[in-house]
Length: 504
Image 1 (cartoon, rainbow, N blue to C red):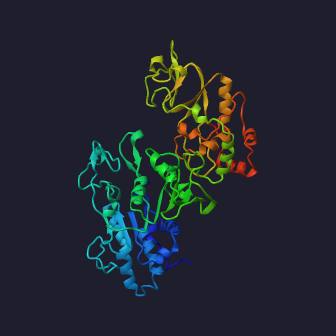
Image 2: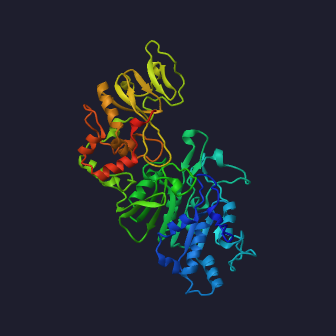
Image 3: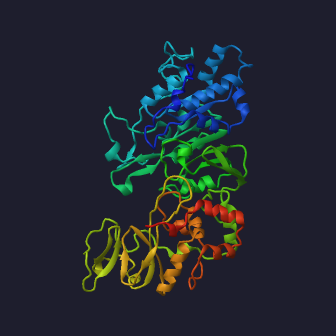
């Protein structure tokens, strides 16, 4: 039977502007709003701000809740509408287009004072959903607020600047000249700053959170990429501040972003959080897969002596058992990026071996170079070592492999920036034992705690304990050594794919 009275919510059908500016589905917005205390919706004096309004869905869904919550206090429907939209709900649009879309969603008119606007009290077109074209503030070749490059964004008045008003000011409180009880939203995630791959984009979402905190609301909630847990260019100070802030009382984590934003591929997944100004304590961490909350635990954001957030609750007990051994960590054996000073684009090599040549492992296979092409760590050339790709990415659902396959770096060899070097070691046998360890699920499970993007630099190995490499290793031996339970082993098995089953 065909339903003739079905009226779909247009905001659940919008195509995203890009992976960086993602429209939030109404159902997700309501999940985020559910984190807030219910008494807010019956408070006629509470003020709410979406500083990054795109579709207006956050403001619209908050309006629905306030309409119901204030029904007994303001019985007249039109009076209630006028009060909520003029005195309680505020938005800052990210572009002129989204300002029109937001007003249409919230006021039912692209102009707040238009003929069809449901709010009767506005005397200007913008109402409480503001948009003002902002220019970047250039200091040298970059914007001092967001890091945009002058070459890319110093553009004419007819083009969008992507200089978001909320973060392009030292005094965000002057935008509306009021205090807010709640700030919620879905900020732009990153900003393209150049054409070179290694300088393609910079994170942006953390700037909106930092700016929102300056307004000192009672509650702050935003949905952002989960990369900040352990990585992200330029996020070290932000991560440190967030993980040491015990006002973050809830984190809802989506390891697979498509469970949150269907059809949107965001490496490392996404999360939303609740920051509660007046309440401090441990954080309730929820992991969502599909439509299910698969794990929920109240715990500190940082484990003892930790520097990054442990994403999965089930990993906590395993890492605590490892920490009890007080062993050296594997990152001490891993080189920095570009171990021999030879970048991935290096092409001054020969296909065949020649007198006094050095073997070089490149993304295009084994080649040969002159010894003087090695710009760094020449003392490692003659040593036994292990090489592993610095990047390895997967999409979809767990289990993942997390790392590319390692291989032996024989004496008289080097590698390009494509690889990291592990070692050096005193013999080929030790290298083989190291490889046996890397291939275990246990090893790669420890990597998983620090790796939420394609890259696995030296820091990703900091939760891996060093073993005695005079012997080989397998998972059974490691599980026994660290006294892991059946449930802990099953969790590792559910997250990490056996390496030996892969052909590459």
